[in-house]
Image 1 (cartoon, helix red, strand yellow):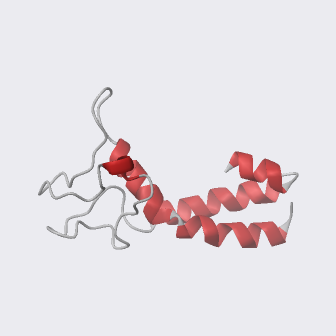
Image 2: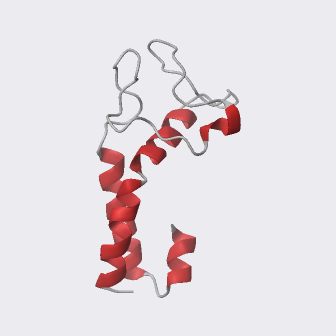
Length: 103
């Protein structure tokens, strides 16, 4: 689709990083177990159990608000990866609708 779409979508994907990290944290469990909603170190709730935390981002620092230990992937890695993948998809997508479906 070109440079305009690439430059427009990459920052949006990067802003979704904390939300993506919360989804990664919630789903890093053994098969058949309930989704993770608490810090694995201090057991403080970090992702609300209601609605399974679908709309809840992790803190921007990537650390537990209670014990200050890292939650999930390091802050910044998911954001950079999401921006890069979305930029490549936007560059290769033939239309906005296909880009939305790919994303």
